[in-house]
Image (cartoon, rainbow, N blue to C red; front, side):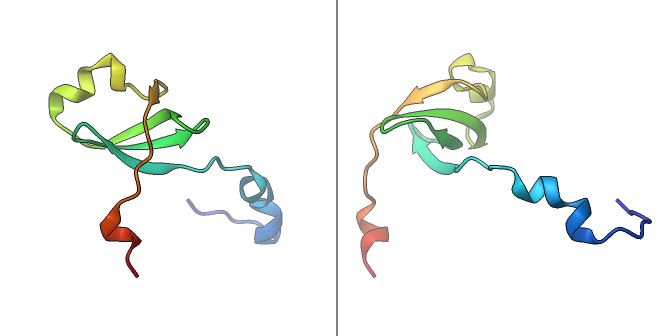
Length: 81
């Protein structure tokens, strides 16, 4: 996109930068890698599927906007520094 204007960039993009973007995270559930928005401790709303079988895209249980329950587990390999 090209904008031909005399207005400064910060004025043009002010509203997009000030939007409160929800925090998202990536999780694996049953072999499905997905991006979710946490709602509380063990529930999340599916934003999109990142890596799964083709048939999983047709499953209404995993449709974007669906709510899932999960138990967060600390990955022992990533915890080591």
